[in-house]
Amino acid sequence: MSMIAAFYDNKSILITGATGFLGKVLMEKLFRTSPGLKVIYILVRPKAGQTLQQRVFQILNSKLFEKVKEVCPKVHEKIKPIYADLNQKDLAISKEDLQELLCSVNIIFHCAATVRFDDPLRHAVQLNVTATQQLLHIASQMPKLEAFIHISTAYSNCNLKHIDEVIYPCSVEPKKIIESMEWLDDAIIDEITPKLIAGRPNTYTYTKALGEMVVQEEGNNLNVAIIRPSIVGATWQEPFPGWVDNLNGPSGIIVAAGKGFLRSIKATPMAVADLIPVDTVVNLTLAVGWYTAVHRPKPTLIYHCTSGTTNPCNWGKMGLQVLATFEKAPFERAFRRPNADFTTNYFTASYWNAVSHRAPAIIYDFYLRLTGREPRMTKLMNRLLRTISMLEYFINRSWEWSTYNTEMLMSELSPEDQRVFNFDVSQLNWLEYIENYVLGVKKYILKEDMAGIPEAKQHLKRLRNIHYLFNTALFLIIWCLLIARSQMARNMWFFIVSFCYKFLSYFRASRTLNI
Image (cartoon, rainbow, N blue to C red; front, top):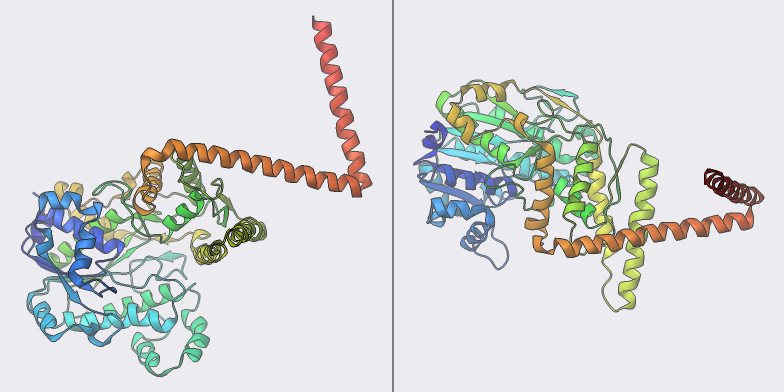
């Protein structure tokens, strides 16, 4: 029997970020492998027109939880949503709810964070640093707490080439950053942000590094661990391959390329695409929770959850497999024929972005105006290009992460736990995974029926023919203009025609002699 699964039985667990991609998969795995757990508390901020319980039912109605409902039919009774707002003091948790949490919680998985790369520093600090500090303060008052697991990112120290499983200090202490956010105005914060992040590409990676420092400084009296996943992608195996529900990272690129909006990106083909399946992250997280609670290691252990060290896959290989899958299962109603050109030539890619992306969008919006509809394509394209530009830092570089703690943990697991909570990415077949990823985006994000693939292939064929026809016509028009204006072009054209005529004459003469 799995020791890890048995450990979580009869436990009360608090998950922040449970409505997010990672949080949902974490809940699903917990319920599926440990149906005897007591309760999962989730911190939720209600959306307009939805109660907390309605949000819970919305999560459970996902295909992700189909297997869970077979194992644990009354799963909804084991989820207790707690109103909370990470932007507010003390997370805006009521006294009654706070008291229940203090008396009950055994394990905390802190998954909540803002993952927006372009967030203003004030907002990123509030969600990734201050909220973490406040949650640690609450955790320190929980007498039954056995482990506090903090989900960070492998890119928290992306200003370094080689990253060890240690906490690297930032130039300014987190407490001073938190205090300064309370009295500095937005203009000054925006001005000092580039100096503070110092070598990092955005406020996300910087504030995640600050969050790690907060965990180290204020979690001394707790059993704490930090997990650093790289780029989290669709499920590899559990509960089924290819499940994904958001457009972050590669998913957005796949949608944009599959629909024909994205024609090229500035990427280094040989740079490592350090993608990690979400179920791999979840398996490591649950194993870390067990190990931290049972063995109570000191000092705080950090676990890298990355793929590039043990099973690297580069962006060029990934792009080719994505395109191959598009050929097998095209996306419906594509705007243009899918094509992804991974190039290291920044000038060429920038020019191609301007011409190939924006020009058709402007033309399409002009058509929408003529037909009395609201133009939206240019706005969508600008948003897409802005998102891609934020990812360029990560798809043009490679990093090295040490994985000693992660390997140590794997060696501590029983054969059964290694099977049930597998986080060994050396077993991952990238071609198969990427194909399932693309199909998952098609099924679970775009909600496209796989039965519509034949029709989509016909649509793709029409787009391909239009693409070839357009390029041929454009070439002929440009060539005719050159012939009309340039003597050199006319001479070249005369030479090509003469050469072709002589070659055909020679070929016919040779055939006559052979006969």
